[in-house]
Length: 112
Image (cartoon, rainbow, N blue to C red; front, side, top):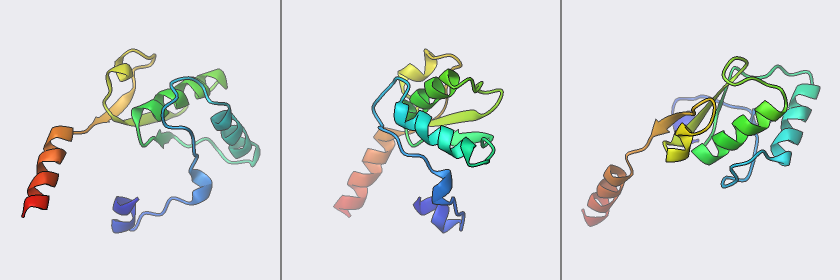
């Protein structure tokens, strides 16, 4: 969110969906939110960015159950590059996070 603000990119709250971050199955709450989103006459976005791979995997499962084809109708992007991203169909597009490097930098900043 800070990066979006820094680059003056606004994503309206009406285009943000909220789900449990640790469920790898379809989520009824996401189904409900997507159904309401589409019933309001809004078009499905071309891509969803998820704050972690678990949410992205859950989103793919939910979209598939709703008859929405990933990646043909919309893309789903995760963040973490967990191993599970390779075993779902389609494989998840994800952003690799250099966690060790981040930890090193955090310790170096704290020590200075």
